[in-house]
Image (cartoon, rainbow, N blue to C red; front, top):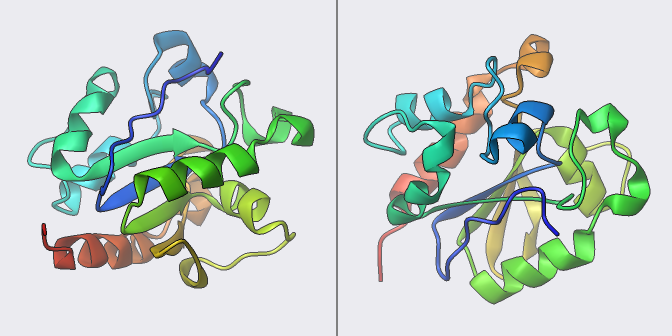
Length: 167
């Protein structure tokens, strides 16, 4: 059983993919619920949502073309606490191919490293795709990653999303 349910629908503009639900998110049952997490603030400040959502309202972002998932669905905690065998990269890819988002943004390098299967990834737009989805790696919004915060890469995703026109 998943720690957090996916918030996915066909044809989204962007799916944000984290590594796993953090402790606060798992307890509350909502994405990006940790007190120091900048995710909801960032979506609003970049104009991707009309107001700052509360974590418990995470399903409402679907109406704005935004989806949410993690590469680890069966465990929770800090990235360093998550063992490699619970990563479900194949399941993640299957979901992305089924839902065909225009972009996928890995919220933090650990989720991206798991997908790419390599020890090093850079922030920004990637040359690889999943089906036709453009891939981005953005700095983690977790309070624990505050030292690496750089909104530049998040702005790149926001510009791409704004350029997506509904068919």
